[in-house]
Length: 386
Image (tube, rainbow, N blue to C red; front, side, top):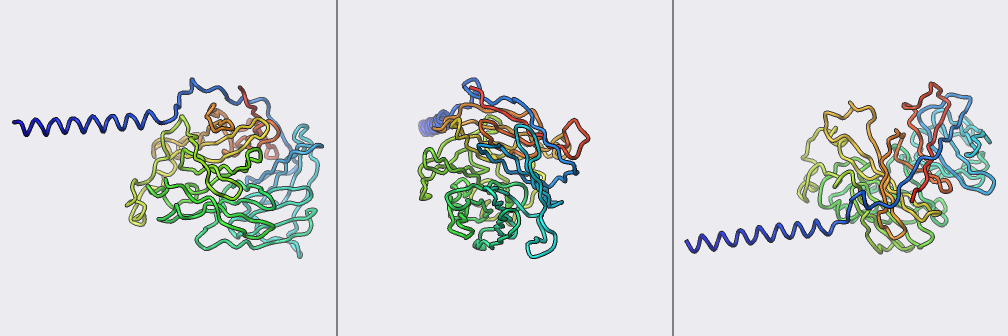
């Protein structure tokens, strides 16, 4: 009896210790109580831009701040047409088209992923062909093949976030490996040439299998000139990471959401990752896993904005909801304290924020506009509320 009693005491003691350990870990997590938030964003207006021609659904955008105009550049990939607007007035400032034939013509624009205008120079990144294309005065074309090691598989679906830095751009790449934390998530393109690989994946990717699909691996990064540091966000990680200008990691900061506790893996554990080829699953499950999207920096208000994809919770709801994904934006101050989170009731085309001055612009999804016009673009403008 004494032996049984002793064993029972040991079991009870171990159970209590495990409980206290788990409880301690839970208490160490940052608070996600919305009552503690001190900031939000508020919709102030809607900008409407109109062109004479019907727009396709394959569009890219670039916003620029200048002393004369805050401008919007719209690229219609299907028609090869570009439209430049004054944001405040909605006035069409300029239009031009890319040649279909001739020495400066380009055969296929479908895999263009990002555009960036600098003065009279337009820079385009094609992440399928690994091309950096430069238009000077929108006439001369300089096309550079960017070397990316074969282990870096580029990703060309949907808008990606190209981040200007010094004389080049930081470009996210898609990597999948069973030793993924040893792989770079970003390449640096300087003066049109491949210059280096940076921002290795965090260890969370080593612990579980998230599928081989690109959207789980595409990093989003910004350069904060005020603090001379990079900040990098990954789709499955509740933390963001800071790096100095030499690309050395300097910190990790919690930036989670109130709408999901974790980005759920397809299968858990290191064994699942190493044996990923043996897994079969309904691909619809990937459309039920909410995740983090893009990271942005508001240099006027000294705030970081991190967007999320909020997806249906069950496979039965996939394809049956009015809109595939909802979204929210997490607000962080310059010390990475979470000050708020805003849930968007409106339907937006993509969780991509365009920062213009103090305004956050989001493209209204054309499917949910109260208009039959195919030539209208509508951006809702939000401002920080504190």
